[in-house]
Image (cartoon, rainbow, N blue to C red; front, side, top):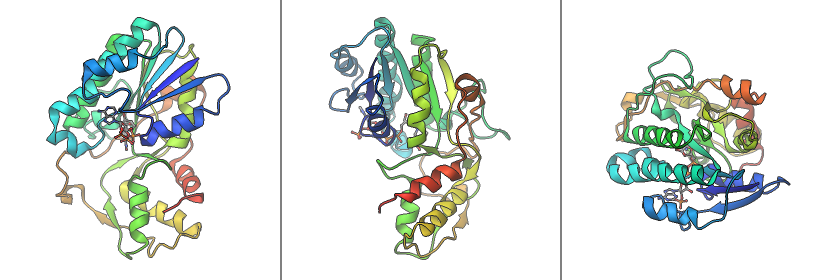
Length: 293
Ligand SMILES: NC(=O)c1ccc[n+]([C@@H]2O[C@H](COP(=O)([O-])OP(=O)(O)OC[C@H]3O[C@@H](n4cnc5c(N)ncnc54)[C@H](OP(=O)(O)O)[C@@H]3O)[C@@H](O)[C@H]2O)c1
């Protein structure tokens, strides 16, 4: 089986390439923006079409315009990258008999529900990022019911810094840390996701939407505080392990509106694959065992 990975130098894409290259029965083709530029849908399709792949092969789209505030500033660009190009790629894959695993986001929801979101819950994006990602989800599944949309949240991992790296790095020089306490979801560790997503390479797994992240629910503040504790436990010289609470409404620098509570219910993925994602605390603990500033 050939697996072509778009966004191969992103946070998730890098982990997929690294981990999946070690699998025996697949040939991994790592593609970057230079190969498939999603900002030009026609060229993006041609870029992917130039590669040989067909029935039984898989394309993973982990490329996206992920700067939530940036998407508000360049709405047309975000639409091309997150919706129009994924649609063209999905139709190309369907025409060639290949399946597409397309990465989605919890930001398609408005975050007002008092329980974790299931795949069939009604999306209602509050930001242009969320809207374009939702359009992308619909384009992908409209091209073929055999394709996958895998919605994840708060992606972190060793290949590209994210929230946890920023809070720990800052605590190396400052005794003050603060993070939003009234926004909740769950982190998704890229090293775990590489294992979980491999289950979708099985042609018997039915297509559709799957929610996938580590287990449990936390706020940015809980997440940051636990990251600092793990860092300290592993000899990283942080100056504090206490994170002061901030309100989401106090984050004046945010341009896009963020949904407050977007934990994802992953039970469909577990029922389908037999895999139960481990708790987010275990994943964060593991991550800091080999963390480098
Ligand atoms: N990060 C999160 O917390 C989060 C949360 C929920 C969902 N997600 C979703 O998870 C997926 C993976 O996220 P991630 O954290 O791995 O994102 P990331 O680190 O920002 O990587 C995104 C990748 O997309 C590529 N890209 C951006 N614009 C492109 C374009 N015009 N043409 C081709 N490639 C382009 C980037 O290439 P360059 O390296 O060249 O810029 C990068 O490799 C995305 O679908 C995202 O929406 C992420």
